[in-house]
Image (cartoon, rainbow, N blue to C red; front, side):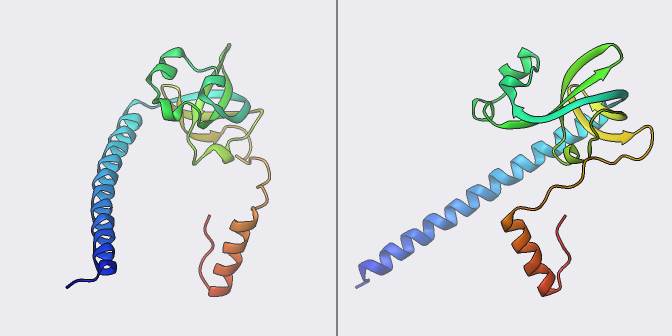
Length: 159
């Protein structure tokens, strides 16, 4: 006779195994979709010279993006904050969504040459002088703690 504790343990183990399989399948589908979107953005990109007026992280509703963008955004993501750049392209001032990877390196109140796909900024290069952004922020407590632990262990720091 099998004890009740062993039955409970086996059921929990089975549920965890099923959850892991489902998450890996969903993860592969999401990764494939993201790679397709990246390829499409790379084919549609254009180089534009623009003056970066301001940069902020703000919700989509407050960002001043076109209404079509708001309508096509999933309801769960409408409250999340996006990196938004307020730029001047020629005589026109517009708001663009910036890539999260390059948001910190975008200089404010400087003219830059950017690769843009629709309303999405893919990369930024400084036109005049170096492409230096504001001084880096101090790390928060947990990142600092992890960095010190890695340094003591002899691992390379994460950037």
